[in-house]
Amino acid sequence: MREASATNRGGRALPRWGGLVFAALLCVASGIAPAQQGTRVGYVDMKRVLDAAPQLAAGRAAIATEFAERDAALKTQTTRLEELEAAFRREGDLLPADVAESRRREIEALRRGIERARERMRDELKTRSEDELNRRWPEIQDAIIAYARANGIDLVVQSPVIYASATIDITDAVIEDLARQSADATASAPR
Image (cartoon, rainbow, N blue to C red; front, side, top):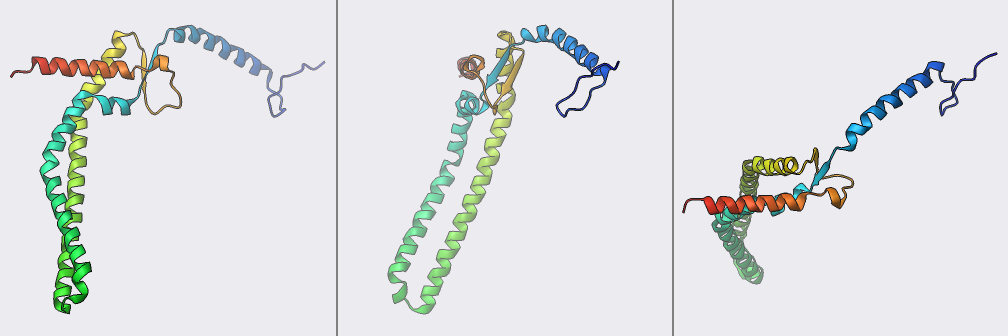
């Protein structure tokens, strides 16, 4: 008499020892499960942390101040360009051909200059913002780690995730810790 063997989803027969392997895997997995039940997980929405961290807000304010004068000069040039274009549209047909061509070249040169300056400023602003983030990143990361250790959290997952329950979201607490650290640093700074 032949023993009946188990089949897999495809209807193919599994070897007799396949059931033993499966049972062994279940035993091993059940031995691991109790160790994982005590694992605490936290979730951090890094975009919110980076947007709300006072350390980065101070850096953004400094960068805005640094670029304010150049931005104002660019706006002045843009206004001048708009005025020249409006005047040319009104009077361009009345001007002699050589004067009209000269004004057209002046307008185009100013437009290209503004575009180059805007692009250069955008690149420098991006570089400065990245430098500021890189400078502050260890401080933010250390705050997350310190919070996790102080609260017995074994694993911290950062965004993006598919789903995170509000019960494991530690974002607000990390932002509060960063705000407290920033206030402490400001209070202890020499005046």
